[in-house]
Image (cartoon, rainbow, N blue to C red; front, top):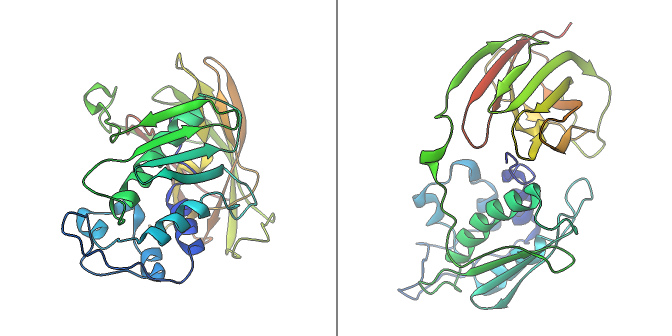
Length: 290
């Protein structure tokens, strides 16, 4: 239950850049959730989508045309040519229908993806001229027509039942088996690699990490090496790098392994953090690359 779809911020930036260069029209109806002034797509791309405040959202205002463009862009391939959503459309002015590009039904990944995308679709809808003080219904299905999720109001999360409250698990060494809320993680073999993705900007170095993980919970576990954060010796957050990274659904008691890749500055040692999406429990590793 840990995946943020495509690293959700990257997806949003891709969507916004695909919408073209037109500006949204200003909403003049008093009952609409309107922005004080229209915002160009280039201005939207510069917004910090990870840390959006209510004041930031007040600057977002989409015409009907631009909102439909945003939905259409959801079915475009990403930078790796992958299509996660086969279609996203309005079936009427108050209903958004989203079809995932798989036939997996109600898997953990589909459920988490739907929950995350529900929040983004809902916010953009509420900052468009479609909004009339009524929450939209958002329906998620797979290619078979199976209903994954359908909501006519925002999803509420019961934070009181979280098994941890952002606990700092401490610092660990390479080779240690680290239990982060039931994900038992082992990091090893940090190295700079010559592998490159021709579609990515050329970084100073690409850091590879061997990652092994065991599911110690009684539920399916989604694990993604994009959930690691890597900082260099200057304290600067490094970017993930799109190579053949580890991403997997793991059954209870089972394990898997693979690699994580990060575009780094070459300034080690590096601090690596992993935070559980549900509990906010965090583990830290400090690694040297020889």
